Image (cartoon, rainbow, N blue to C red; front, side, top):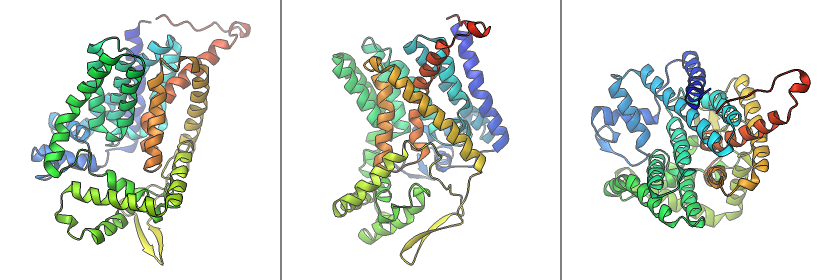
Length: 422
């Protein structure tokens, strides 16, 4: 079977489970990203109504707005367009694995894991940015492993710029990519990579600075504060950290009474200042919280443990945070995710060990989970924050499973060995 036919096969296998999920779960509910796209659709402004915002990265809401405009605001068609984007991610993983491993079977296994991984299938029918930033990160990695001159480095940097416009927390991966090029002695390629990334991200950074004096999304300080407040101990990751946002807002209002009329940058700076004060006041407690975050990166379960719905609230009663109207997931979802996550992590660890001698050529694939876990540790443990590293784990899991299948004596059992023609 030709590579083109295999790519179409992988695309189809990636899309079909997601279409089934769309039929099962029904019309996706609006999310913050979807509401943010309203400003672009109705007013041509990135913000709520006519008021601009720098709270969140622009690319995913912009793509939602484009899809809504092209489909005349048909939610089902917008969800279908998103599923197509996630299907392209499966094809990119297939090509990346085949290129690095030289094995079509390993590539099929890795892309199969991507196609049927429960969490990715479920999230593909929700309006969440990971449905775009994971395929974009795959595209950036695919470009990176083929850099052999400045032109390819420019293309890679441009895609990394799009990644950052979708999820700024993936910046450490871009930094690692530039560092790898420097260590390899590809200085010209590194310069082209950095300049290309800056050219894509630069206009948005200028816009953010002109709006409220910020250069990053104005939720960094907010997220750091809610991950460090005393109430977070024992609360995260049992419950959604967003439930603590009202408590953090109260702390900011006490320090900045007119926060409502301040720019997003000024308010976020206050959040950041309070977060650092918390670190200085109780460094050992913060270290304990972050060590717990790190440990949860290796726990194969859905995080937060208890999801939230529109009725869920966190209130302070008797000095303790109490969650009201707590939601629960079906046990079948928990079990399915735990099994899939455990198999993926074990197989990926085996693949990393088997391919450790190739660590120099696959340095970026190792940097992806390291960078994602770093961000996960600094902020708070959620399965969504860990999702960008899944494709790297799937690559190594595919290589490990391919090695295991190759070591079996199929002929000894009367079964012909599978042969795939490149």
